Amino acid sequence: MIEIKNLNKDFGSEQVLTDVNLQIKEGEIFGLIGTNGAGKSTLLRTITGIYKPNSGLVTIDGKPVYDNPETKENFFFVPDDLFFIKGTTPKSLAEYYTGIYPAFDTKKYMKLLDTFHLDSKKRVATFSKGMKRQVAILAAICANTKYVFLDETFDGLDPVVRRAIKKLLATEMEERGMTTIITSHNLREQEDICDHIGVLHKSSIVLSKDIVELKCSIQNVEVCFNSEEEAEKILGQLTITKKVQKGPLYILTIEGDREEVMSILHQADTSYLDVQSLSLEDIFITEMEAIGYDIQALIGE
Image: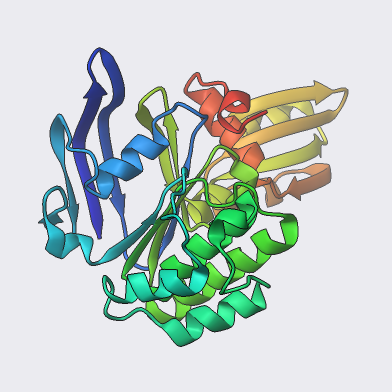
């Protein structure tokens, strides 16, 4: 488990992380959302011990990360700004990582290179941006570490490769309990893979929730009541964050446990009732607007 407590990081007069608190459970894919400059890369570099916190603590499995080689053996970090030694090929990269990660699976790595149509003997410097990122991600997976950290995971990848990488990450999580943190400035990239989402905005975590919990906590409802008295009685029992009325039709955004909300609505005297599922993006818009943030800026619109 990764624990971040009261973490602060600045670079001179610039405060980059402010009182960050997070707990990332084992065996989950944690999505970190934030605009460019929000502090995502700095947070990952602090979690991985590249940066020393000004204050606060980062621990992995109960052990501090900074200046602790033993802890660092348990994770693989793929940064946003990839760097490869001159002349590196995917094959020589495997030889290099075998010396660092004893459990590196060269056979699996070479097979994945073929699957993704990446020439193992060609110099990585000649690859496109997306191909370089594929090589780095495949190496991260085949290192067989307990934790994998991927900064701007899908940057430069085409839709087909994105889908394949997501499937690969999900499979690794299921088969060996790998824990992954992936960052992005785009919420849509993470909706179908993450178990938990955290939003970093202006150096602080402003929201951290389980995705299933999020999806079960807000509903869109269209309803026509058979009387104004009935509408007043039922609406008074619900936590309504948004209400639009068009004649007899109420269009509502309701917070609360889905089963409880449905139980109240089904007892009502209505002529029309439709409960609609919200996308994760719609849920975040509602959640963030409720605490005064512009979600459109956070999801990269």
